[in-house]
Amino acid sequence: MGNQKLKWTAEEEDALLAGVKQHGPGKWKNILRDPNFADQLSNRSNIDLKDKWRNLSVAPDIQGSKDKTRTPKVKAAAFELAAIAAAATNTSSPTAISSPVAPILRSVSSDVSNDDNCNVVVDAKNAPRYDGMIFEALSALPDANGSDVSAIFNFIEQKKHEVPPNFRRILGSRLRRLAAQGKLEKTQNFYKMNANSLVIRTPAVARPKEANVKPRQTNSPRVAVSQEIFAEASITAAFKLVEVDVLSDVVEVASEERERTIRLAEEAEAILELANWLHEECCQGKIVELA
DNA sequence: GTTAGGG
DNA sequence: CCCTAAC
Image (cartoon, rainbow, N blue to C red; front, side):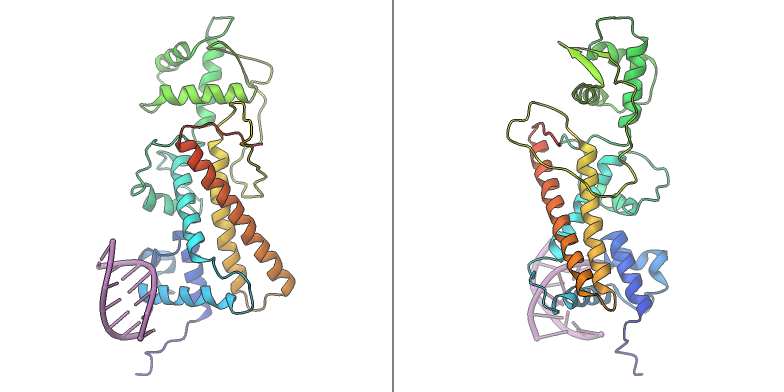
């Protein structure tokens, strides 16, 4: 009888927090349907989750934080960006992914109309594979002075590698990028390998660390595009914002810790801003350099 | 059917 | 928590 006012248990709050981290804020029904949280939240409705999340979002603000214009809005935007980035990064890979953004990919990639109306949307996932195909082609092709895009494209095509329909366009991007990185030598429209072609770089995957990027829009001499960095920065931003929430919710947050938390949030916003800027620029077909 | 916001 | 407008 008296169970109309059920108090939220720590387990429920934890489940909600984890759910938001997985599906993003606003996907209450999804969180509720998720088998991982269904049992903990069996006594809660989607609207309950919304109300609780609203309360939790307001709670850390009453302590005297001077920032009252943030929280849900930016966070949602970050998730959208992360989802888009994830979609761009993953393209078409039904393989099981342990990435925390994998579920988001499914729900958003469909309604954001992924497509390639934006230059950012290539794919960091297949990039190494494409590069490998390029190097393979350049190694095999006889032209000592280098090969043009068509020659490389034809070689890869006859190799019967699995490539998307718009691969020729992607190939052009990859070649320009590799040339910009110094991994290929470009003269006129001919590309050939050099000493740097085979040096392996540390993979930018699985490392949500600090994204040390800075924009240089002053006089960028047409360099790389850096889709990966965009994707990574977006995801990093989203995760940092979530982390902020988790930290804020902890029982006693020491003032020192709270300071660090706020710093984290600001940094995340900065990255997010950069990601947004990158998105804009790239959608206009511009070429952006990240130093 | 869901979600966001006000009550 | 409930109610309601909006999607």
